[in-house]
Amino acid sequence: MEKRSFLTGSPSATQDLGKRIGEKLGPGSVVALIGELGSGKTCFTKGLCAGLGIPKRHVTSPSFAFVNEYQGGLPVLHLDLYRIEGVDMALELGVLDLLRQAESGVAIIEWADRISALLSDSYLAVNFSVLSARRREIVLSAFGEQFRRLLGELDGDENTIR
Amino acid sequence: MRILSVDTSGRFDAVGLIDGHLVLEDFVAEAEGNSLEDIILNVDRVLTSSGLTIADVDGLAVGIGPGFWTGARVGITVGKILAYVTNKPLCGISSLDALAYQARDVRILLCPLVEAGRGNVYGGLYRSEGETVAKEGEYSAGPIKGLLEKIREPVLFLGEAMELHRQTISEELGPLASFRDSGGGRRGSAMALLALSRFERGESDDALSLVPLYLKEPLAQALLAQERKRQAQ
Image 1 (cartoon, each protein chain N blue to C red):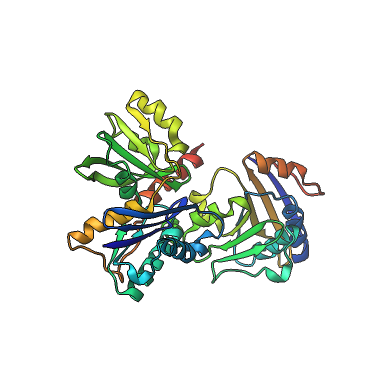
Image 2 (tube, each protein chain N blue to C red):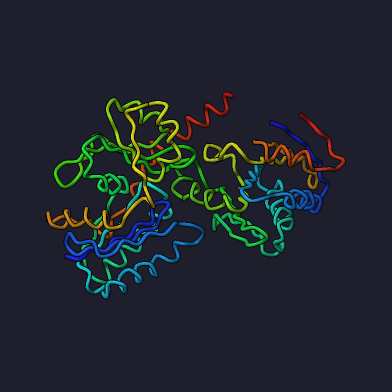
């Protein structure tokens, strides 16, 4: 597994990082977002979607609806598993079906740590840490070759950790 | 007795129509994208091509899985609605039972397989018995190897998940394993015929309380065990 760490100083910087990654996502991509409430997951998702050609105003947090569908260059499923308490509950909601449906597009999963048992071996994990009111540390971890390559292609003046 | 069957719990959406033991229609289409939205269109297509309407149907069969959870739920809901509006009896049929039933002419152990996700399968073991099949033991959900450990005799594998695991099955069971080319997999008429035999025995399911066959506990356990293995690596 390869990791890269980025520091962002504002929500728009977090969104920009998301956009740079979104531009590189191909069919079958799974992005697993992990971090506390308010750590930047939805903000980052707006960026990812912008990179995938979906207007930011279409992207809202599906905490209550549980899943949003967007149509960009690829179909995008945006899941929010905040209310999911375990694998049993995720299965009941049909998360495996949704992930299968997303195999031809992109799946973006907030609170993905709650369903790690349902993820395949290929995904990009994004961990958010709150450093201050505006500053965030965002650690990207690549599982599988597709995302190791993606991390390698990302440029920027970030700290790189392995 | 005319029976209409609807199954959207698997990789193929199936609609079947029988009149007694005579198969009138077997519609199968690959389930992809938003094909669940076509479920009523497919039902209509099958009825129309037989020159019938829903009012001519005497009973309904619906696939309850195991399989894709969302598909099973949509299919069951449609089955319930049709049962309510026509005031006709409804029968929920397991996808594994129906796959085994399609090979009821084979005299060795039968093992239908349905994808459960992340390399796991739903499975069951059956033997033909007269004109139908009888299940041996319980349904299972988990890695294919767990199911194969129980098999020590010639066995015929069936179903759309068979192809995904053909290599593992051959390695584990060698010459004991044979495979039936699924050729599009499930047939709706098999579900309708299984429902017919239940209706003839005076049985049916309560349309209000019928739920999918999830096999949630064994599948969740299998997924969690896989995750522990992955974390340990």
